[in-house]
Image 1 (cartoon, rainbow, N blue to C red):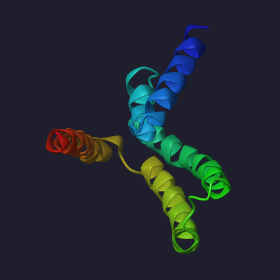
Image 2: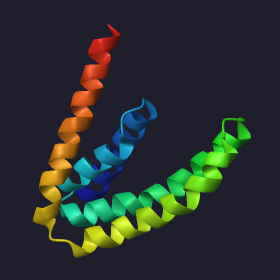
Image 3: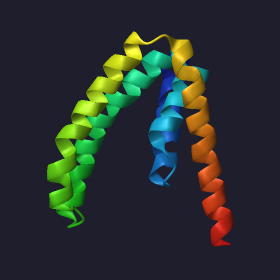
Length: 122
């Protein structure tokens, strides 16, 4: 029961934070690895596969609200789906140690760029 509640709490909190503009996939990845005991490479594969239906739903809502740039969707949708699938498969095949350092660097860069942008706007 504890695992189910923790999973729900992680999903709810990452969903809320991502609605505020924080990278939900990154937060979900951190929750899976830090709190749910999922190996990093499996968490990255799950995260990439989770992106596909989320992106599809987002496209529907953006189209409904008139925010969809159709030429961009036509050129980016198929490569994006293929890249997400390839990345998920690659993440499952690579050694987890190979993924930790680049992901850590990415998190530091992403956090630093958010802080820099916030500081620059003030």
